[in-house]
Length: 302
Image 1 (tube, rainbow, N blue to C red):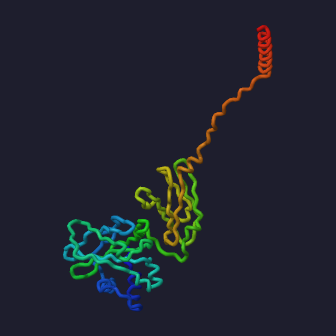
Image 2: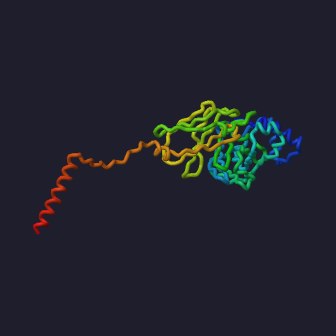
Image 3: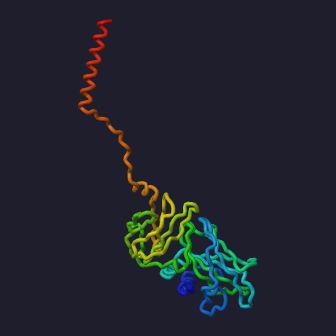
């Protein structure tokens, strides 16, 4: 787990240089982060996760922690911000965008509890946010931070820190990737041209029933193709997100329409045309003349 050292260094610098106002608790934490932190979230053991996410809110699931005396910690702070750590380091003025939400005197009766952020907590659904949880014991001391998460409410997407990626000098624009696809039976292969600025690309598939996007895979940008099995007819929407999230695209194809277009066309049966032989035509003419002559003779006698 990263300890946000670079982030804290620049936070402290920015607080001095720009006079940005943090709560006293967060400021104390920043000033004492260099000391050994004995309690709090244990790396790879006590991890937070996303329990639910909607277009308006996100609920974080966290284990209940204990302080240095073995008592349950009932106060926690969610610290969240809309920029990557690298962006904050490059431009300390962005620290002013960092937000916190405190959860105090929680009634903790089980091994886990939840904390919720909503759009009323100054969240823009269109922006990706980074988030950590910080425990605070009875002495108002802030302990070891949790693992990091990042999320975006608009399309209900979230990642663990390792998947959040980092910002590169060049910005990956998936609109330039010339995305296409081919279908073979019930498998589709998505193809693209690798673009600069991102080592990997996340692929998400829209779930029409839940109206959310579920992650298909994270793949190297240089792979330039990905194949998966089609499980239903109708329309598929695949979201391509480069790992620096600069410019994503939704790619749509219609499996049912293409499958029908590929079906062989069965020609309609043609009604046979009866062609009379010349001999039959001549016989008809002769019989017609004979019948006419018979008709004339019978009429004269009458």
